[in-house]
Amino acid sequence: MDTPDPFAAVLQASFELARARAAATDPATENQAAILALAGLLGHHDVFTISGLERPADHAELRDAYARVQLRGRDDWRKHFLVSAALTQVSNTAMSDAAGLLKEELDAGGASGFSFSDLLMDRAGTLFGEVAARDAGSARALQALIVDAYDVGDIAPPAAALPEGLDAAELQRLYGGVGGPGYRALVAEIARRVRGARAYQRN
Image (cartoon, rainbow, N blue to C red; front, side, top):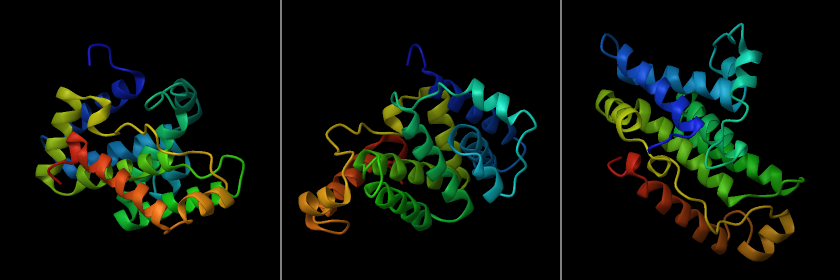
């Protein structure tokens, strides 16, 4: 990209540092550290707590500085993506996916509603976290992609035409609820989009 957006700039800077440090350490470990730091600052501060890390002394100042950083033009997608990636570091992929789904189910009963586009960002973040720390080869390949040839579509595919703002009744009526035929079809489409992103095609 000729003029990286703020999310791209922050992500690239973090993974450039991870790649430099990995010359003398384990690249997967360095990627984990980058993800946890980004998720704590740009996702949710509780990431520091659940990962056993101390919040930076200037956390509030950094958080305010990064407040306008967005993923595909949205604050909530930045948070979904990074927190899911971080949860993969401290638990596993299945737990991260389950946490994302639980959050959307709870939203279906609240003001924001169930969002399949949020679920896409959850799943993309989960796979990002998995690929980032799977092994040394995978970790280095992701570092190179982000630092040398980043495009947002490489890690977070478009969410076009994925329904949002569904209350529990609409989710049940239109898609058969969680696990219903319509729901499964959209989840399969989400998986197709995420797996088609360049960072994940070989994983």
